[in-house]
Image (cartoon, rainbow, N blue to C red; front, side):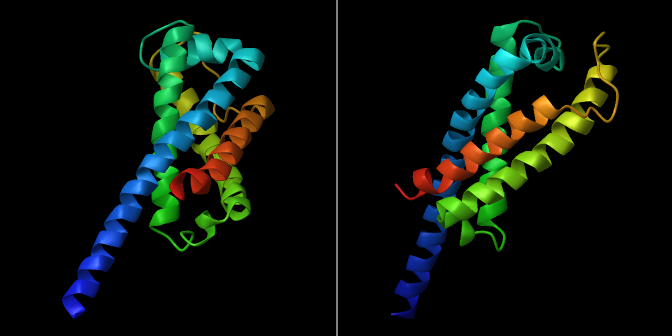
Length: 160
């Protein structure tokens, strides 16, 4: 009997983790699409030039592709964060997960947009590279919306 319980627990944890990362990818992609529309409407040069320049590319298609890949990655990182920490039980609640998502969006903004992106753009010689720190309220709002959508969808998709 103890063996069956242990096997069931290991299987439950394994299923939870697999479902968590898959939910992170899907939630991240949807959140990224919402943020991408905002970028296209409000900060077109960022999605068409700055984001693709990180990889030596240019143009809206390249920018959207890279943005969506990043969104999936950040979605998986969100899933890992809530799954492997004390936030796991909070991630089952849409309200709590949304709040966590908003905080996560701000964290992603600080690390990725405020610090890493301008340094990277300067390193690759992008002529319009912003200075560090790159404080932009439009960018902050985009990342907050990303986190909000990610956090709100994550428990819905994971518990389907």
